Amino acid sequence: MSEKFDLVVIGGGSGGVRAARMSAQYGAKVAIVEEYRYGGTCVIRGCVPKKLFVYASRFGDTFDVAPSFGWTVDASFDWPTLLANKDREIGRLENIYETLLDGAGVTLFRGRATVTGPNTVKLSSGEELQAERILIATGGVPFKPDIEGADLGITSNEAFHLETLPKTILIEGGGYIAVEFATIFAGLGVDTTLVYRRDKILRGFDHDLRDGLEDALHERGVRLRYGYHISRLDKDGEGVRVSFSHDEQATFDAVMFATGRHPYTKGLGLEAVGVQLNQAGAIVVDDYSQSSVPSIYAVGDVTGRAALTPVAIREGAAFAQTVYNNTPTTVPYHLIPTAVFSEPEIGTVGLSEEDAAARYRSIDVYVTRFRPMMNTLSDRQEKMMLKLITETDTGRALGVHILGPGAGEMIQLVAIPMGMNGTKADFDHAIAVHPTAAEELVTFKSPSYRVVDGEKCNP
Ligand code: FAD
Image (cartoon, rainbow, N blue to C red; front, top):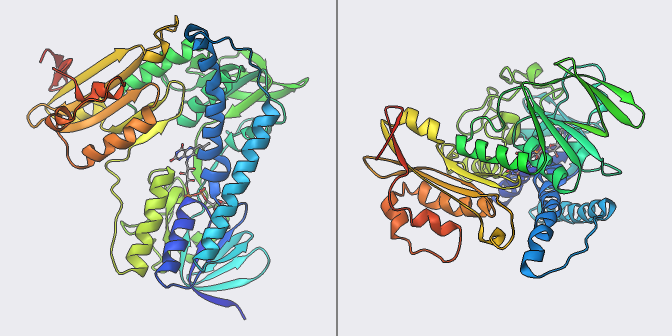
């Protein structure tokens, strides 16, 4: 006899765990199935290990400026130590996830699950679970391009487990994961090249962030090659010989594909039960995360909405609120703050200048660039940038973009006034904290320029 649940969640990552816990707390009988490790991409092979690597990669910058503050530093780096400590921390977090689920009364299963009907889930063990509702939270997976020798390349999954730190690496991609890993490896002393088939990194971000980070990558010795892609990989001794679209060849110790992620719906059995998928393979859902089959819901990366942990968590929580707490809840997708943990860091919320100028007849742009105080005693010339975009008529803040130390932390707090439809006057009303970089956001006097009907002019 198969066991019966109110809810079976497939996928123990950010969205699935939140939905399972909250649904159980609202009184539902909940099971969750995970095929790899509880915590999912973010905890096991995404945000968390990445941020730990980012911290490791930033010590070099601190050591560089340390002599200007009177310090003498004789530092060396040990990759195995970082890996072992990272793995220990990830294991600790994984245990916490399992304990929290258990504590909420959720039944945990291990193994791969497939959907065999609108109300049935089959586990790789052969066990079958009955479910009044099924929540798909299977996330996304990185993919390698369909080229000869692709298996010689790695993705972010393997980058967290490299036995030795390569001396040279080629990264293909121009999104946030590509630039983050480029600065991680470069910061750890790896000779790093980034190739991207388009003409600039970070498509969709404000142009000042893209330009500023591009300059900083150059200064940090990361080679950028645009209009390139990898057409073939071959083994070359201990390394990998890369053939590029431009008939060029070069050998690297490691090659990493950061060319995007697919929603992980393959082999789940969804098409057979009538769940509608879009062209990218993502599950099509309504505002309440319900799929085309009424008993089947989906949250997180597998829905292709916004592939970020806090969004998956919000969607999981909104699902539980809607279905098990009688409170229909949607997620505010229009204002998602986000960070890129590159070096320097990016924090961004709201509209880019390009999008703001396209949507509003007249916008005011306030921009400042300066050397972070930490660097002023040394000869480091790298600048940070803060940018505020407002609607001219109303003064409403439309976008804030920051490049430099602490940008991720700053943007989290800027998201609060942005969500309250804050205006330039509200920013002005705040008393500055001195000396900080963030104070620039509340002390802008007059716009650097205005954009009216798409034309840049003096305010
Ligand atoms: P996931 O967390 O991917 O969880 C899905 C789970 O389902 C996985 O554990 C998987 O093993 C399991 N699963 C899949 N299929 C089955 C099946 N058939 N049966 C059983 N189990 C199954 N986001 C941020 O907000 N900030 C960041 O800094 C950030 N950095 C990132 C860095 C990297 C390198 C990567 C790859 C991602 C990063 N992300 C970041 C994105 C973030 O990790 C995802 O948006 C988030 O994890 C999505 O959560 P989810 O619940 O949709 O899926």
